[in-house]
Amino acid sequence: MRDARIADVCDLASLLALFDASDVSSYAEPHGRAEHIWDRILARDGLTVFVSDADNRIVATCMLVTIPNLLRGGRQHAFIENVVTHPDYQRQGYGRAVVGAALDEAWRQDCHHVLLQSGRTDPRVHRFYESCGFTPGLRTSYAALRPTGAS
Image: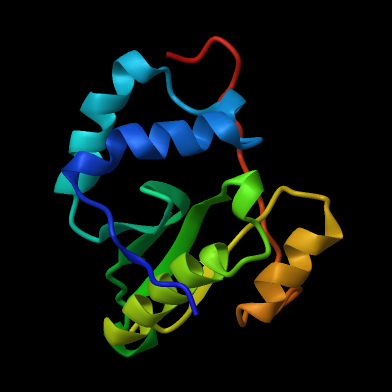
């Protein structure tokens, strides 16, 4: 099994290179703003970025967001977001390593559940998430999009 670790301040350039190489690059923040955003991410409690390395670069990542909760006996809930694996390293265990590390951390923090949403239509992506322990169809997901022209 591949290893995953928590990202640190020195990982920004490698993460941006991963995003540029993947199909999420059109959604990534411009590099000029990335350093400020990265500083905010690293400073935020309840937010952890996991990465997996190969060949002296980051080849997979995901973000775990944990949130205190007044329900479920006070147990937190969590979300996994921004799951990305470099196209040249897919189906080699790197994506599974970061998602597994995020789930392990959520369970260590006594989270009630971990939610993950995907806008992808590729059935392989959904099979991957199911193989990581996620069950489709347990909840209905909704998204509100920012209105055009909103400041």
